[in-house]
Amino acid sequence: MAFSVTRLIEQYPQPGISKHLHVLLVKLGAIWGGNNNENVYPPEGDMIQFRMPEVATSYQEFLALLSRQGASGAGATC
Image (cartoon, rainbow, N blue to C red; front, top):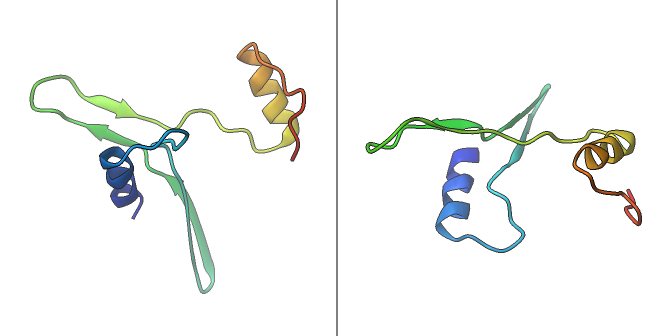
C-alpha cells in the first residue's frame, strides 16, 4: 500500500506533499507501523536509497531537531 501511494505522489507531485510516508495498519489484535523506505535500482546508474528523514516523537524532540538544523520552534504548537 505504501509503495502504491508513493508512486501516485511521484506521478502527481503537489507542493507541500512529501514522498516520505508513515504507514499504520490496524487489524484485530495488532498494529503495524512502518514507512516507505526503499532501494531503487535504475538501469543507468547506481542504487538510490530512499529513506525517511529523522522524525520527532515529542515536542521536546521537535525543538531539538529544529535546533540542530539551525531553526527555531517559535510559534509552533502541538
